Length: 167
View 1 (tube, rainbow, N blue to C red):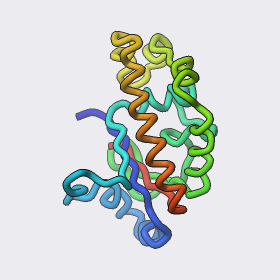
View 2: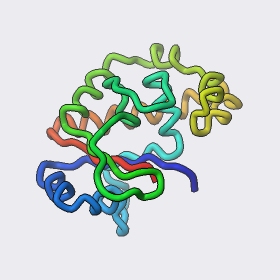
View 3: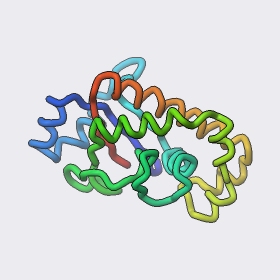
View 4: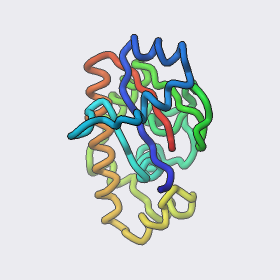
């Protein structure tokens, strides 16, 4: 299966409920009943490309304090460890900062950040795949960036934050 990054937008009431019962965060992000046909626009699943996407945005394999560090940063941890750590909470302000920083990056500037050799060297999850794919790997990551743009814009427009987990 592998390591998968999933986020779900949460309004103030949902956030308060989860903060009151932190162990419910995982089930909120990954409900057993799923998201229904057609998915859920409030959910973003970066699948296994999360780490490569993080590296493309930040140039790092690690947690960062950069506004572009939505995928890996020091956020408030919530609930129990579900294998790769607990879920975490991204406040509406942090989601807005990410959205604003991401809006400054166009496709040519993102392409200039793409370095599959560095990804393999820095042990980015699936880094060897990006190295083998070369420029084609950029296309997969660009799709994830566009999904992040839509997700963040939706959260900012509604004033919501998000809960995130790596499973």
